[in-house]
Image 1 (cartoon, rainbow, N blue to C red):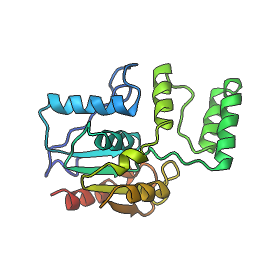
Image 2 (image 1 turned 180 degrees about the horizontal axis):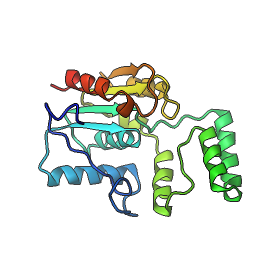
Image 3 (image 1 turned 45 degrees about the horizontal axis):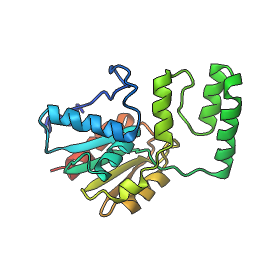
Image 4 (image 1 turned 135 degrees about the vertical axis):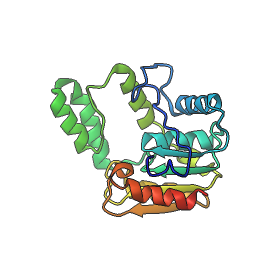
Length: 206
């Protein structure tokens, strides 16, 4: 954001159950999160805006825009989640993780979830576990196909959590969207390539 505040008004939300926000067991699903963002925008009297979402935030943004809950003038998705495609091997590993997870120490569980490509933390609170489960079970490609606003997708070439293949698939679903792959960047490209992303934002958002 510090690369953009000279040109734009920037507002960052700590979503319920994340950041400094408290737990809220009534905000679990992408729909409920999108409604919370819409409510915050209304309270701030913001009706003309570009919506930027990273990872799960991108999933929430796509769902909200596709369902008409959020109405930005431009959508920027950074390493957005919400594509649910599993290889046979990953399915087997995930089944194994569920079946033996209760028997494994926390550190071993973390290693196992990393092995299957998940950043899920078995030490999370019950509410946050429900949030993660709801997000992991929700595919938003149908909502992506309903997005009609100008959309830019940014993915790290070395992202293993939300790989470029996800971005390319969403690019195919969102008519007229722009897909940009950032070289040598992983899932946290909004941090490691912040200045590059800010430059792209300034080009696409006039």
